[in-house]
Image (cartoon, rainbow, N blue to C red):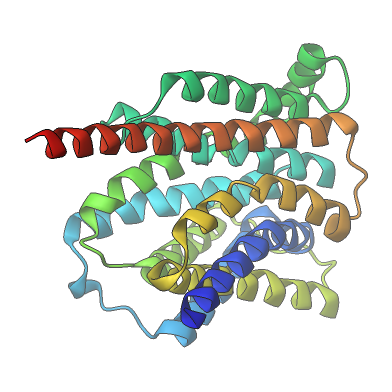
Length: 310
């Protein structure tokens, strides 16, 4: 029982780390540039993961998992890190993160569409609508809802498109890798792929590094890379022996934690509409998650009744 609590605690710490570490990534990209900063963060993360779990052996993973899963993972991480780096301001980087946090909703919708899971439409439809409305409030920036959202997106469409695309890509990754991985976890290998891809992009663009970095910049880089790697490492341990129902519920509060850490780490003052939107995204995602649990419970109850009548 104590080990179960320990693994669950690992998962909670991982969620908090993920909520905080991406704001450090934003600071790193300010100091080292959007592409160079992201490349450095993922390089440090890969090194930490290798130290944490050893060098990965590509031969032990299914080929489809390495090729398709690796491509989706790398694409997602590029979308996420570059959306933060290309955001016009720290406030906007906090906004694009909330857009990215639509991925739990898209994961559930994808599972239902692919018939990997069943869901109650009475909860799934309103939950989806509430989550999307929440994102609209976040992106509006405190102005008139639709006018403010349109103006904010048009001021920097690249960042918002990357964040939204990343949410969809990660949902696809979550739904596909279950069947392709055969229980294997190639996170370390995928981080190495991501770092190499970013360095290649940095080289081809001749992006260089900004010249304003200092000891503080390097310290933030270590925090970002180490925190990201530690988050993945702890989560992998948590799913082995933790309470996954509790961890799944807590993970849906990531947008709330992210907003709190944005105010603390980035030192930004976030509008009331931002917090209203964050709460709506969280409630909407929880409703969608509950819709699958409710439907599966119904199916289980019906099956039990049928078994008892035979």
